[in-house]
Image (tube, rainbow, N blue to C red; front, side):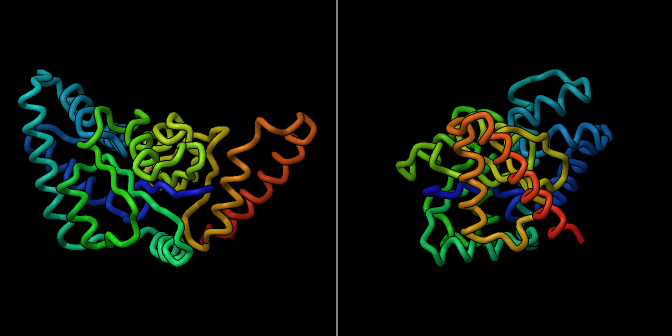
Length: 249
C-alpha cells in the first residue's frame, strides 16, 4: 500500500444527514416528497445521476437546463448547511492524523463539486491531502472509476497500490472498478460485500498498520493456491468479525 484514497461525505464527515435536509428541500421546491427508498439510490452519486433519479421519480421532463439549475440550487443550499460546521465520522480524524504523522500520501476523492468541497475542507483541513479530486473535475463521477483513476494519476501511482476508503455502494463500485482495494465503513445505506472489499462498522480504532493488513488481504488473493486461499479467507473473516464486534456499541 503506497497511498490511501478517501471519500468525503459519509466517510470522513457525517454530512449525509445534511444532504438529506437539502434533498428534502429540493423535492419541496419541485413539488414532491422524497421517500427513503429514492434517497438511498442517490447516496454517494454524482450530480448528473442524482438529478436523473430525481426527475424520473417526479415524472418531470429531463430537460438538461432545468436539471442543471436544480443541481446548482441543491449545491448552493447544501453549501449553507456545510458552513454551519461538519461533524466528523467516528475515527476519521484520528485516522487522518495517523496517516499524516506517518507521511502516507492521502487523496480526497469525492463526487461533491469543487466549490462545495472547498467549504467542507474548511472543517476537515486541507493539510491532510496530497491531492483532491472533485465530481466536476472528471468526465464521469462515481460509480464510474474516473475519480479514483485521476487521484492515483495525480499521486503518480497505479490504482492497485492504493487503498480506497468508502461508505456507499456507489463509491465502493467506483474504487473497485478503478482497481483499488476498498475499505468500507457503511454510513447511510448498506454496502454489498465484494472480493476486493473489507467492511468495518466504523473507522474508530483503525491506524496505518490496520490499513496495511487490510490492503494486503485484499490486494493479493489471486496469488494464493486454492488451499492457502481457503485458510487465508477463514482467518480474514475471523479478523473482520473481530473488527465489527469491537466497533459495535
